[in-house]
Image 1: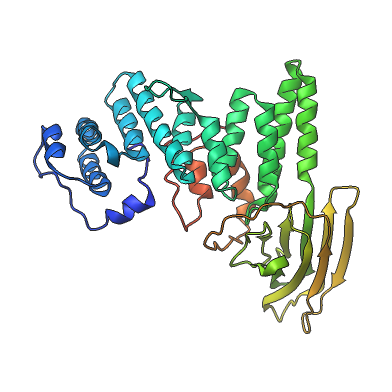
Image 2: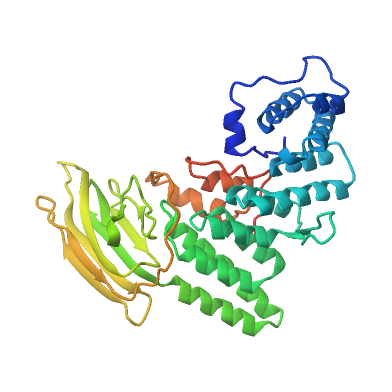
Length: 405
């Protein structure tokens, strides 16, 4: 119902549980949940049972009764489902907003980044930049603040960043757009890096033109200046060749972290963003904001076709790309006796280690370059979350699709 998913812990705990409701219609949900000590996982199973039977008014009744009698077990997803149940059942929109506000209140208290994303997603889909919690002295729930909190907890996730781009566009907020551009460009994005960079530039430049037309030229110029400053990268390593081969980069960063095609991003910010195969003869490692230190670059040969073997294999190293200090150096690579290339990087700009996440192998199919930009560029909601979600964790982001610009 509405695409809202329970958190991974609830979904896992619900495995093997059967509905606590009888097969027949149960009218007195208040009595049922008053007399049964039901867990959050059990409620999830019960609600799913009712949804599958299309008994949506009873979903509403079950959630209200559970939250009434088990308030200490309340979780954000319960209120989000309640808000959607209100909408399906044609209730007063104010009641749905109130439920969303309570979901945001709990998400803000818990601080889980994926729950924060989920609530912000539901708000943005409904055009709600702010909702009021019906309790005296409680600060309103703002979609932007939820996204910022999610970023602080999980700066490696793309969802809050692209959702923040969408919010900045809707609110004509060049400050949010500039800050988000800086955050997004501070990382490499395995499998989608070039497409996302271009899509971000398109959106930033479009906002600058709109600001200019509104007489906000100074803000437009400042936004473009921030984009150009953020566009620079501390370290870029590009491997190119001619022929039919599969050549991958392996980069050992300072302190020993290793970026490869199977573990493309490290906690130190570097990422293998492209892996060449066949005639698509380019592999790429980037670290837009890197720690200073020694980087060791190696070439792994996945295959090398006998009928058209790789030749003219060149490794290009670019330091401080796009700045006055840009330095480029190229190395010819002998695949019969490949030797590691050592890069000494000074004046790296990274100051923060990323959270560790389970490795996600990057997609290397040629179709990716054609599929990704517009879908990723129209992000902010469920479709984007499905596109961006790594298989190691579900964000449970809510329903709908963001409008394209």
